[in-house]
Structure formats: C-alpha cells, structure tokens
Image (cartoon, rainbow, N blue to C red; front, side, top):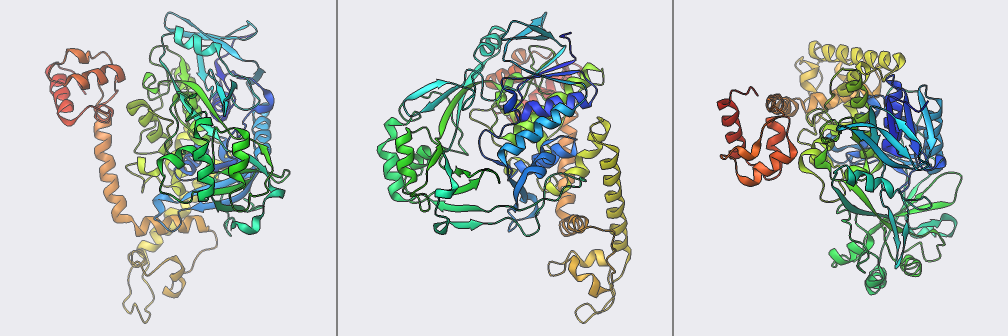
Length: 610
C-alpha cells in the first residue's frame, strides 16, 4: 500500500515539477507536503522570470514542465526585460496572481495520473547498504521507494527572525522540518546554514501612487509557454519609488535591533538580493535604492514592497516605510522577516542531482543552496527525469552548460559549490548568444519529446514552426531583391538582412511577399540568426571545443590523492568532487591548467581512456 517508484518530499516549486515529471514518465509517485494549501506557494515575490530566470522557465516549459503554463495562466502583467540590450539577455518576466498560481499548481497535481499527494512532514530518510529505501513520516509511517527526491526548500531547521523575535518555521505560518536535518546528518551528509528574507506587504489602497512612477506591462505581452492556447494579459501596473536619506538614517540607527546585524543570524545571506540593512551598510554612499510596489493579485489589495527585505522589528519597518514616497500612509499587512535554514552542501551531488553517497537519493531546489522559484523548478525537473530514467535502466540524462541554462545552473552547483544562496545570471553562461530565451524550444523540445513529457499537439506545433522557419530561411537565401534607389543591384535577401540598417520590415519593398502562415515569433528568430550569424558560428566552434573536453570521461575510481604531479589543493578538490570529465575537472575552483595537464598525462600513462 505504501510502496511507490518515486517519493518527492516538499511541494514547492522544485517538488511540484519533480512529482509531475515523474508521474508523466510513468512512475507511481507520492508527493509529501507539510500543508496542502501551500502547494506551489509563491512564498516571496509574486513574479516569475527575469534575467536568466526567464530563460530557465522557457527551458522548463520546452522539456514539458509546468511552471511556464501556470505563469501564463495566472499572469497579471508581462514584460520583456533588457530590450535595449542584445538578444542574448532579453528576458521575459511576469507579475502573477500569488493565490491563483498555487491553486493552478494544485489542480495540475490532483489531475495527474499515477500521483498521490499526502499532507505530512517527513522525519527520516530510510537507507540500506548505501541505497535509499524510502522515508518515514512524522506519524511514524514508512513509505518505500527506490528513488527519493528531497525538495524541502527553506524548511530544514527553519528559523524565522523579526527583530529580536525568533521562532521555528519553514516560512511564515508553516512549521519547520527539524527532524529531517538530524536524519541527513546521521547519513553522513554535510549541512550548512543559509539565510534569506522577504519584505513587508502593504495595503495598496493606502499607497499614494501619484508619488510613484508607473511601470506598465508591454503592449505586446509575451508569456513563457510554447504552443499553448494561452493569451497573456496585462491587468495591473507595478510602481517604482525609492528610499531617501531619512529612510537610511532610521535603518542605520536600528541596526543593532536587526536580527542580521544584531548577531542573531549566523547563516550566509544572498549577495545579489541583499536585505535593506545590507544595502545601507555596504553601499553607504548611495542616497537612494529603488523600491518596486507589486500587486499580489487582482482579487486582493495586498502589494509586495520589492527592495526592502529585512529582519527589523515591526515598529522600525513601519517607520522606514513611512519615509518612502508614496508609502507615507501605507498600512502594513505582513511584516518582512529573515529566515535561516539548513541545506545540503551541493558538492555532495552529481550532475544528475543524485547524492553521491546514497544511491537513489536526489536533492533539488533551495536545499541545494540556490535561491529563486525558477532555479528550484529546473532542479526538480532534472532530478525526476534522472530518477525515473535510471529506475528504468535508460541511463542518466545530463544537461550541459553549452546547451541550456539548466546545465549552467547544475554544473555551477556541482562543480563550484555555493558559498552563498546561488542565483543564476546570463553572465554565468559562456554561450549565452546561443542560449537565448526565444530558442529554448529548438534546443530542448526534442529531449522533452524523447522523455515522454510533451503532448502530440505541442510536438506537432513545434515541428510546423521548424518547417516554416527552414522554408523561409531557404527562400531568403535563394531570392534576390527587387532593385530600389538604395539597392540598385539584385542581391540575395539573406545577405541584405545582415546590414544593420535593414530589417524584416524592409522585405516587402525589396520584393519579398511575407507569407501569412509565418508568425512574428519566427521572423524574430530569423532576424537574430541572420544578423548574428558570424557570432553564432564562432560560438558553435567554442561549443565544439567544450564538448570535446566534456566527452573525455574520467574513470570513477581514480585516487587523486596519489597523483603527486597534481598540486595538493587540486588533489583535495578533485578527490571530493569526483568530476566525470576533464572539462568538469577544469572548472573546479583551485584546479588550474597545469593540474589538468598532469591529470591527462597520468591517465594516459595508466592506460586509462578519457
């Protein structure tokens, strides 16, 4: 009765993607959640996407994941960020209805065949002879499965801080999972402590929006999900304001009352999404920090005050908010707080997200040291795919950093670790012109189809898009322009479109009839690929060299500590990380080029093929 193929612990963004993917791939799956009403909860900001994060959501969608679909269904404002920059960093972002998002995720889970959901905390991971056997619930019940995915978010020994008040909690209003940390430590896993936080929420009716700058959605809203009949809608605006010197003075005077600066928090916080206390201290010369007021839905007046996450006492939060233009009379509905939590040091997992020490145990999401809904969801999907594939004897599915942001994320975690909450950026990707948000379907939908995660309808729509794109590419390459005043000689249209002063919109005057069956999305892709063809060609050459090193595999039983020609620090790192390839070994911090050369010589000398 309590036997499954896959058990998923945690129903946040990692857990829901893991449970859905496992069940869709045919595995009998059980999903544990501490609170049914909290499934898929947007516990922090009510938004999806942004730089690199939007790329991740489109990749998740291309692989058959759920986040993009639900983000499009529940979106109340859509923007494409970084349009003033190059296409490599364009990034879709949606403001979402926070409550509706969780409702839609729960509906998807409850409608999924082969998936059971159970409300209970999990206290123990059960193992035998180095293999996972299942889990034990808080109620003492054992649930058995050869594959277990831990997606516990911030719940492991979670502690919430508001000023000098601290209490156990996985997030506001929900209990922490303390016993599971003890179980993982007993299994020999190294746990570390991180910290993150949220800002206060206010009643939007008490905000003077006339003092704020309106941030409307795009006139041509674009969502995340490919080939679905969902029309993105702009229903609200966000609003921009900012702190003032008076704001900073209040916070500076109250620093000792902050849990962070008062010494009550030991966990490492995020560098790239700092608290307002951190901003005031570390950027003391700044006179203003941006504050975005973001509606949390269309059926509530609650608004998220983005940019002022903190762990200050309630009275201080109210006082500093009152100095921000537009928020002078704002009524706080929820106070901000910081949360400390345990995570599994990510160097203990491999590129499939399986724990190296315990076969069949996968770890995904914030428990791996990441921050953000999108990073968590991507990991949940990858963990489930590998759990099911290895269970069926199909072998591992590795996402490398040359073909997806998912690969960049996982390779960074496994190879470089996380000394602070990890956040993905486009700057972390070496091949970001190739890894654009607009072509995630071309890069990953074939894999999603092979895994059985894409419907026939979506696959057929993708194939039609690919056909139309190839057809128009060939037409542009073979069609000459009609002579004009500025281009008197007939010239291949494909070549003309490389010119910076010509674009797709110029084609009709050059004699090219734009067919009705080609969408604006296809034209946008063609424009980018034609304009940047030379750069893309060079990037493909770089990718080929990358793949050569990635395919030079290292045997799993190498004893690095005995290779005296490798520096001691590098030996320690290699022994701990156990890289699967020379390429991965070369990316480990503390391993330099001479160490890699020494390793190649040693492997060759010992007749090991790499």
